[in-house]
Length: 295
Image (cartoon, rainbow, N blue to C red; front, side, top):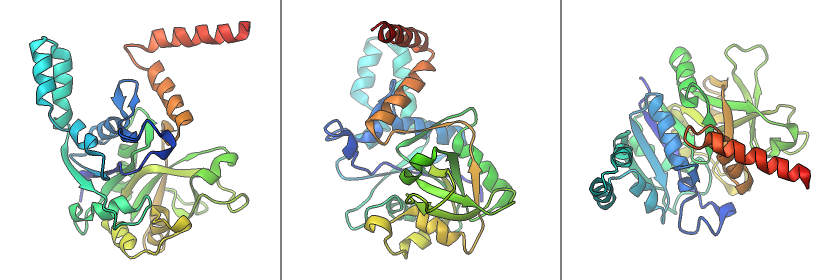
């Protein structure tokens, strides 16, 4: 089967951004002039995805509203003859077929739980894309398309995206070890947030996956893992024992927006590349740097 569906996890509480995320979901925070989750949807759609399942939590109706029509806003823009903005707003709900699913409180905490919330949307033998709502990738070829191409060629149990991180940061991520001399790269093991010395690898798995429906079956029967959470990494590790899990070291730059510092870094990088403001923004930053050097 070809891949037409993507599940995007937008069910977190964004506690590291409080009080900003008390009402506004973290995934709706803007990177320049678009919310984070819209970048993810655009990445998936550009890769050929047609159906988007957004897994939300209670209190995040604004995520669904963003991908719905806004009659009052559209009338206001039409009356003001602001056709460019009107076209932009009207295009958002038509980017894909959207389904909004609540991650109920009966499900455990963890990055595997959104897949349990979305499981009724995935057929028994259907591969699909899974994306974390706080990971962005700036690349010429959409990151999920890179994974989809690997899946289409080799038909493994899963394909996971990785990039190198500094050794001092391996404790922040799921760290992947590769089977020696495997081509394409095949998963040997994956450890969630390893302690110092627990692994020599610096390949960090981040929030881009192509998964088979079998991954959801495993999650549905998996015991809770580290910190009493349901970890996708544990399911992938188990899946790798019964089917090949391939690892793609993706092209492009990965930005995590899980905390304020990295969110600001992503804003700067995307702002510098924005065709409308990039040049002026760069000039401003150069001026600030000069002011800092002059004391």
